[in-house]
Image (cartoon, rainbow, N blue to C red; front, side):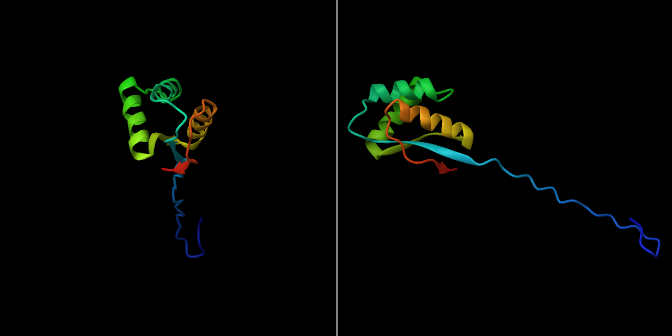
Length: 97
C-alpha cells in the first residue's frame, strides 16, 4: 500500500490462537456403585487409566464425595462422561478446565 507521499504502510495481523475448550469429568459418590464397578469403568473408559490410579480415584469419590477423573478437550470429555453415565456412574455436569 502506498500513500500519496510515497511511503508504504505495513499492516500487521495480530495472530490470536483460540484454545480449544476443555472440560473436567467428575464422578460423584452414591450408594449404588461399588468400588470394583467404579474402578472397572474408569479403566475401561478413561485412556491410560491404571488400576492403581482408578482405585485411588474410587477412594477419593467415597471419602470426598467426588473426584475429577479426566480433564481435556471438550469433545473427548463429553464422550467419556456419556460412557461413564451409561455404565451407571453418578456424574457431575461437565465443568470447564
